Image (tube, rainbow, N blue to C red; front, side, top):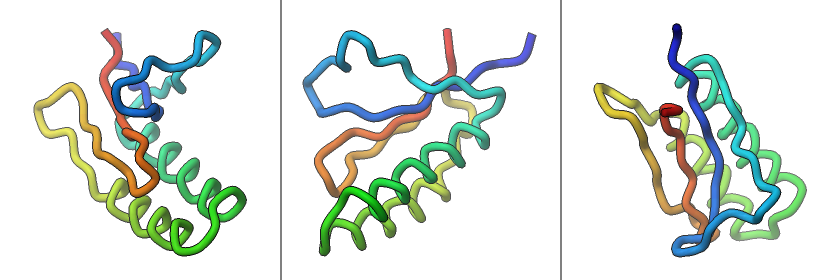
Length: 89
C-alpha cells in the first residue's frame, strides 16, 4: 500500500470548518503542487496587493519544501493561515 498525503490550510488555533475535507494525493510532490496552485490561485483572484505578491513568493517557498524522513511540514503564510502537507495515518 502506498502512502497518501493530505494538504490544506487553516487559521492557527482554529479547527477547520465542519464540512472541510483536506485534499488527498498519492505523493508528497502531488500534494505540494496542488497546495502551490491553491496559493497562487488565491493570490491571483482573491488577494489585493501587497498580499498577492507575498502569497506568490510564499508559493515559491512551498515549492521548495521537502519532507525528508518526516510525516508533516507546515508554515505560517503571509495571510495568517497555516499551510500544511502531511502523511495520512
